[in-house]
Image (cartoon, rainbow, N blue to C red; front, side):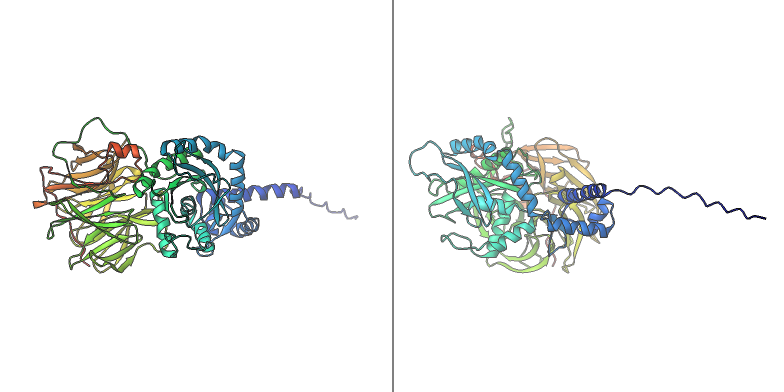
Length: 574
């Protein structure tokens, strides 16, 4: 018998292998995807990028390394997170060159020069300094600065330099600060690194930078950054002139004008919640409203009534300073402090606690800051406290926000009398007014960024705030700011850009509106005899000269008798 050979099983077809060109295209697409993830969501660590991209971590690690070698990404040595590299910024600048940044700036420079009667310039970052690339002068006689096109200015001592430096991403800003020598150019140059960092924080919070004779004697300037679609600076626009024509008040009034000009140059409405326009209502101030303290702070906030001293305590966040006012005599005393100060509250054992920068500081009204109680956010140097208040058990609640008012960066903190610190809520936009119902069962908290005052169930025994829900949300230009609760359980809310104060019933409905002669009421508190006077702080920051002429009392403290007493407010028990 002849054996029949066994048939070989049919072989499976071999799938086509991608050629090198296809593999290269896939790798390029993946790399661009990683760049996009970092650009839109960064800074991120490798694991987070891999998760977002849906790729193995090892693959992502190799691709990030290649992008880093090309200068398109960089890894922060302190945080381990990935950010866009300097090569991207160089490419972005070339894009802006092709879009003719000078052409876009030309009408704004002409307008600034004509409106201010001074010189207007456009500057670009250039290594460890900045260079002026365009200029317009006002048609006026007297002292003129001459042609500055092509001239360089130091980053640390010029308004344009500080405006751009303050708005760089934190790692890039730290890198540039390390590379800049704080060389004294005049007696006014800031040469202390800590003082320089505090000055940059002020620049970022205000939205503009000022320089008075810091680089050149006899010359003053105010500048704002021109930002790209990511909110990062690509240029700066400034107004500058002789110091005798640009005193501090005029520089700060021009700050709003250069902010508007910078936004129009970039074609960007602004990536931060920094309102710069407000329309006066037709209604006059309500009867009974009076100016209790005529003052000119940048951002008056956080009023607290000191019953024993019969004085009103409040802060100017952006000076920064703490104010003690004798409202009976109309007298005010300011205590300058070294950091952005969001609020000051009394302590039951004497003295005060100041929510400053990202820390809680012990404060004496004569000696100033005497120590640090607690640092809330050591990992967020770009944040600051914005408001604070104590419950009736002596706990201190204080909210933070990003200095540039970026969303999602804030946290509501609770500091117990034993100095134990607890995060109550994260992911907030602009933490603001706080208060409790007379029976201590409801806690109110404002997030100005969402235009909403929230209500929580509150347990005074434990300090727990639960069951968050909207109490009232505002539409239109008015935004809720500081608040106070009266003895009937109604909530009084200062309305930023709203020209007044609103009283809302416990169910959230509007009960009353009190009109004020200023656009930016910032906070409220009850004080005076039997807590029957409502005091209202206000702001003048980013108001133009024309708006200040229309509302000259902006920044002052106002008062009126609302016909109801306030609910008592606690002091810190630690």
